Length: 199
Image (tube, rainbow, N blue to C red; front, side, top):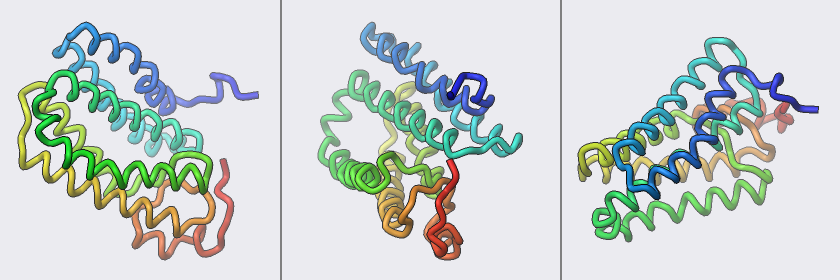
């Protein structure tokens, strides 16, 4: 049976991002933009911390990768909710571009759940760059207002990253974690040997 003792310190930072969601929703509901922005910053910061700890302490696992991905997705969704509420005019003005960027992401999620039964956790270099750009844009916008060049760059990188994720899904018959990108996937024994990733 899985108990809380089975989770390592990196997992707990991922847990924070998940359990912070109700607090962030309450702050949005109360219209507390500054408090919401600071707590969202904390959530984004824990993403960098848990990855560092997992590598430093060598406690990386399939379960931890899934927790990390779930925490990332929930934090990103909360950031979007914050933008929708606190920067509604900006969102409405750019709704078409945002929708175009989201279509590949939704497709990628559906393909992953259909094929693996869960979200991917490739954690590619491009995904990390995209996540940093998204966090930077969302936080900057909430604290100071939108910067359009960063918004456009974030959209382009996000679409490219999603297309890479879709490609990787078709390259791997079984769910795997921590694939740096397509170049590395081509040489990955887990793909070549079709080995089952331990969970």
